Amino acid sequence: MLLTSGIACYAQQIGLVQNPSARQGLSLNGPWRIIVDPYEAGYYDFHLHPIPGGGLGADRVPVDKSDRLELTFLPNAPTLQVPGDWNTQKPEFLWYEGTIWYKREFDYAKKPGRRLFLWFGAANYQAIVFLNGKKLGQHEGGFTPFQFEVTDAVRDGTNSVIVKVDDQRHADGIPTAMTDWWNYGGLTRDVKLIDVPDTFIQDYFVQLEKGWLNRIGGWVRLDGARKRQKVTIRIPETGNYTTVDTDENGYARFALNATLTPWSPENPKLYDVRVEAETDSIEDRIGFRLIQASGQRISLNGKPIFLRGISIHGEAPFRAGRVFSEADARVLLTWAKELGCNFVRLAHYPHDEAMTRLADQMGLLVWSEIPVYWAVQWENPAAYANAERQLTEMITRDHNRASVIFWSMANETPLGDARTKFLGSLAAKARELDPTRLITAATLTHYSDPATIAIDDPLGQYLDVIGCNEYIGWYDGLPTKADTVRFKTIYDKPMVMSELGGEAPFGRHGDEDTAWTEEYQANVYRHQIPMLKRIPFLAGMTPWILVDFRCPRRFLTGIQDYYNRKGLLSDRGEKKQAYYVLRDYYQSLAVREQPPAPGTPPTLLSPHPR
Ligand code: GCU
Image 1 (cartoon, rainbow, N blue to C red):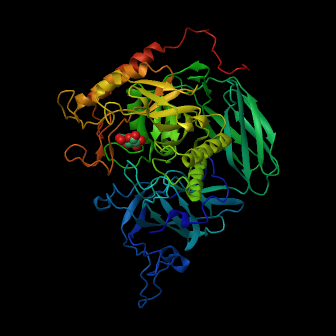
Image 2: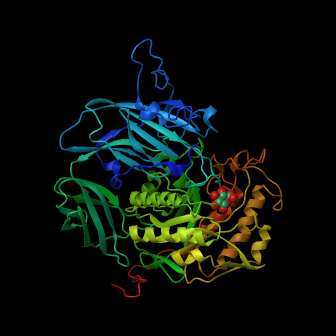
Image 3: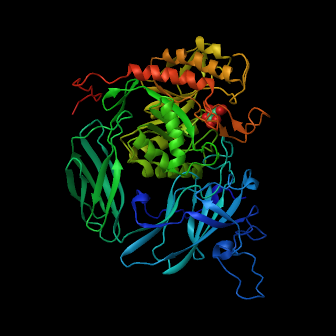
């Protein structure tokens, strides 16, 4: 009903609270009562004016037996589990796009000298949040965290949170109205009441300085009355620490020399890192690795690396709903490891934090992306502001994750000046927020002649690494076409083939020329791999896709049945023939990359080794 840009007063008066899972507080996960409201009658009156006080959000209850109050949650209202999408919890919600109201009560004993934040891991797509009948604000974007400070709004005793979640798609949204994935709605990730000291460590950034293997550089930010404090950053295992003084804004940069074991997929070494202020302290598990692009190569910890990757949607296998737990993440990342991957492209939106934290632990490099996908409204300032906010939320949440090496600005966006300007600005913002990681985007291909794909998208000038999606053998000719196609680039930059592949439901067989069969899909890969090997500037690949996934655009009866079947595994984990083709290739690469003999000096790629 409402165009997204009409909404004001977003969440986050202060920056996102870093590492909420390490914070005291109260989990608000579990059953929430719900009201399904396709006409948004709980928020707008019959003339489409917002109801004063917030309608259902006002949390009124009937005062006496003659009260004809309609906009209220009665005790017998049905429930949904949080976290979780609504689509896979009740069959009647599978296709539902619209508003569902959530209500949850909680008891809290307030303590003096503490501040409280109501924090959401994500809510798809628009969330309007009320506490004890008062509107706190709203958030837009279904895949990044947001919070509201509720120190004064929380009562001692019983409190109630009401959230209007609406997942209607919008042309001016991010993503826009057309995507190739299921529009799972709801409070899809954890909800928590975070409890911190009056002045607390709001955020910290602890990563290796660009170009260094033994020097950590970063910053801390305090929020609260006592902004000027001494803050110590400590790595107990190595004994290294440094103490800095925060300024009048509570901010301080630091540098810390330390002898560290670099994090890598083969050895995902994580350290306990403590940030200690005078009024607060917090601990995190952080790995230290150096990622660089130089010329047409990518190096990790000073050594060239080929990124053996796979693309993954944030959809849990078997139950086919949004990923929201470590258990879901472990299934997907274990399958990626078994395939021989050292890299995953988390498409096309920031996945649950469980994925990136587990990638840290399991040793998988990560491409993380915001859903600037296909045809966004490039000249709409509200769309840009929305994209930039989602970018900021994505980077803020995961900027301490060693696994994350790429920030991706977009996927398959049409050429055009307004688009390139939009994405160029996002890339600049990403560099400002995090100068240590590589900036990329998945671009579309075009032929400069019938046998040559030219990598010359003007967006490339703003990127460190060019992502390229091609479907030779599927949308573009037959599998054998790959035998004659070559790639040329105008950029002295590495390229990652961010998508390639073909479709086949598990168990559908025929000869290799018969579309929609496992044999055909495997043949696509058999012809792709030699073509990829011939690309001198190819530094990695993330074929589309690890697992079949739900998609409302895929309705070939008896074949797709509302699933995109480009997975190498079915949604039940069954391995298709193409799985083995790619696995064997990755295994052959991994064998060749066995680490050099002990004592071989590392080759640092920076022009001026430090
Ligand atoms: C596109 C797109 C994916 C989509 C895939 C496909 O390239 O980026 O989101 O699912 O192709 O067509 O299967």
